[in-house]
Structures are given as C-alpha cells and as structure tokens.
Length: 330
Image 1 (tube, rainbow, N blue to C red):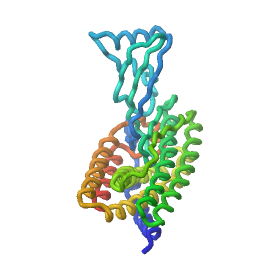
Image 2: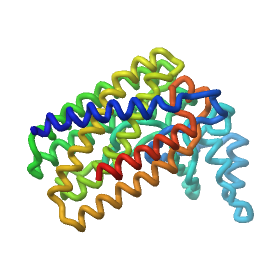
Image 3: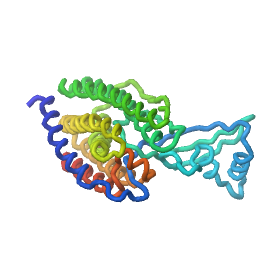
C-alpha cells in the first residue's frame, strides 16, 4: 500500500477515535478553572525607564537583599496583577541590575493554549491583552510556527530518503497551517488582541534521522494528537459560533497531521537502530508525562467556555488517552 494511502487510512481511524474521545466528556457546570494544552515556555524582557512610584517601590523590594521579592514586580510589569490577567503563568522572574537610565526585567511564562507543531528554536511572546484575545494570539503564533516546522520536516524526509508521499503530505500540512494562522489571527483580532511577530531561530541543516524521529514523536504523535482532540472538542463545544466554525476545519486538518506523524514514526523506526528506537520511545514517554502535567494549568472559566476547551477532568482523561494511543502505536 502506498504511503499516501496509509496516511489516509490512519486519518480515518484517528478521526473516528478522536471524535469519540473528544466528545465523550462534554463540559458540565463549567468549574472555576478549566485546563487546556500548553504552549512552550516564553521568555520576555521588559525595559523599565522612568518607573512610576508603584513600580519604583516594587523595584526596591526586588533589589532589597533582605526581601529580594521580585514576583510582585514581574506580575506588575507583565500586567498580571489586574483581575482578568493574561493567559499563562510566570515560572521565572529575574531583575538585571539597572544600567544607566533603565532596568531589565526578565520573565519566563508557562502558557496554556492548544495549537500546532512546535519547531526547534521557537520563541513566543505574550500578548499585550487579556482573556480570549490573548489565548487566540498565542494559538495564532503556534499555528504560524507550524509552517516552518512542516517545511523542515518535508525537506528532511526527502534528505533521508523517505517515501515521496510523506514529504508531499508534510508540504500540504504546511499549507494547512498557513491557513490556520490566518484564521486564528482573525479570531485574536476579533477579541481585541494583536498577534506578536513570530520568531523561529532555526538552523538550516539536515538533522539526523533520530533527531527528526524524536521531534516527530513528541510534537506529532503526542502534541498534535492532543491538539486534534482539543480542536475537535472546541468545534463542538465552543460557546462562540464563529469559534466553532473555525475549529471545525482546523480539527479535521490537525487530525490528518497527527495521522501523518504516526506514519512518519513507523517509517523512521524501521530505519533506526535498536538503541535509537529506545531513545525515541523514551522521548515519547517523557512527552506524555509532560502533557499530563501541562493540562493541569488553569485558564479563566469564561475564556475556556467561549473557546470550547475541555474541563480539567476531561483534559486529564484526554491526555491519558493520548499516552495510551502513543504507547500502543509504538
């Protein structure tokens, strides 16, 4: 059977499985916080020039050796101290010693949002707005980031002698992600957010087949499969009808991308040594564990309802289902 037909066959199987899983636990009662998929951590640098009295007091508290409490400063600078907050949470906060007329505040975010295949070298920026706009702005960045990710996958599949149908499907996926980025950018703007410029610091060399297989297992077999589950849930459950319509097409595409990842995984493993196969399996297992942890990160209930994200219990069950599927597929 041709590899293009294998992708189609796997897509049909995954589409039925994902619809069954994604809709098995509909949202009931909307608890206070709902979980979603995670984005990669985001590093951001804020320059403070001529701080106001509030910011100056927080700077002093951060610089004071007796207190050295920088978290309030980071929350204030990043705009997290307001009642709505931004999507995500601060995992690292650091003040660099003031230099002349400004100080640097370095913040690392762990964001909560569903979305595409993350390429090596991706650097995301937090949105300057809050709520649904911030969620869709982050998702739009991830969808846009999937474009170079699939472009590189297609190129490296050709370089490693993969069946031509797999590179063709990766190129089609790149076109899908361009369309997704435009659609989700429009959603972000609809909810008052601008999408920050994407940064992908990607080296243009052909990686080893093992490196390609590891990224594909983590970003495709695990992350994209979960993303397809979440998108399918959103297509059925989003309170906003325009979000439901947008996610209907995206869910179908992401399911096919997950199917492609499974077929690429099977082909790559057939070419790898036993030791490399074990390392790929280890990376897949770590990705499943990381996913199970990431879905615990909460976002505001109103945003989750509008976007159609699964509740915390459903997100955990979906993550476990992805782990079981990925393990069985391996």
